[in-house]
Image (cartoon, rainbow, N blue to C red; front, side, top):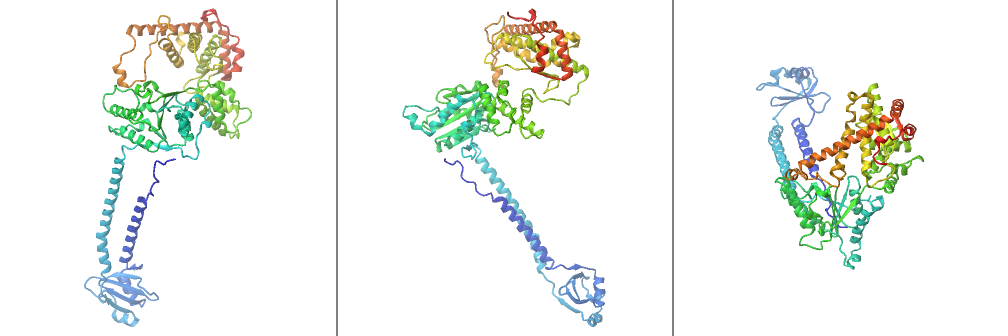
Length: 624
């Protein structure tokens, strides 16, 4: 495979600096050594030296100017020195001439050495000069590095993949069979181009991977890098855009130039919506830079130059905001939708993640796959990892099904907050609130089954009533939506029945918010209103700020008021149905709340005997 980058040169600038400072330090030590005479000489008082000499302890005295060095008997070199007054002799300072002669002390007068003074004077000039020169050299190198960086500002920051020892291949990815087939064709074309060219087929110039976050878009791109025996350049859309206009376009040109030089090659642009948004809504600044970058991408993908043999992969979860010019044939010819995995795919994904995790015989991945409808591949990977962490926390050697269940619940509804202390009133209120959700959801014909009820705070809630669908569903009808609204209102309604209108609390805030969102979606997006039936008033929330300012709302004020009335009617209807169910099943409500106060958490099989006593009154029915 062609190499993009030449081998890096050894980083020797740091070593040069180290050597420089070592030499400076050594020079200073050498200077100190020379100035000290090359030996360790103790400084002493002149009177003490005179006393030692007169008492016969000194074998030699050397006078150099005003400096007197004394060599004690038994020593071969001078070990002490003292300073006398200028213009006087040693005999004027207490040394007795006759006594010295009698003791055999040799007195010699030598010319004062100028070497030390000269070196000292030179060092005073040379050392600061060397330091200044070194400082300027360092500053020049820094400036040169900044200049090199500025010169490379318009260069692409794409990374070259495909040479890794540990590669990701299509066999390592479970599910997404349709997406893998599309990408396998790209890889096969690069490996066997004549097979396609012989039939007059042309490989798509661009493949756009579209899917929800966590569905495996980047993982599939890594698999293409592992499968294709060609250079694979990877870059993020945000890496094109800088504060200077023209830099993004320059980087695009440099990236495609490198890819064409190493053709056949693949370019992968992750999060392409960072530069690929619709043009024409910018008002200067960074938007102009983004549009220039997008224009350059359009030209490089399908301009005058042809047969470049460079394939562009791109990933996004916001395909609705992309510029139409990107999506036309000749640029991104193929759009590959990566959907959330089905049950069989979820089980296959879980098996991949548990392949290297020791698990005991109780682990049931098929059952977990059935419960994780709507989960992405990233969610499943997180569940597997959390299960391993929970097992390690209890010092287990293998992962059990209990660890797996706890991990699933932690990821899906949040961790238990057992440290949160509730008083008796709050616990009783929470028990009735969650019991209201469970009973309403259990008796309504189009609601999902109750999976778990708990009054232990989890995540940001005081308690949880968890409903799980028995199987994956692609569609939701109006009756199912209305049952979801009714069970969402069950908590607030139970509070009102037990404590009266003055006893309702803020505990139902998240329920009411969710119910309102569902009701608005039914009216605006799904056309399920009574007066606004089969009409959709889609609001595009994916535009830019300026885009939102310059475009009017897609419906009139009168329609907005009608939408509000429809939403209010749905919420009121849900409340009436929930109240009818709970009023008719007040004894079951009390029994389930009492059981929750005793046990705090009820699994599906624990709650079923109580919930089965509840009946559906006529006032809560929508259809026979």
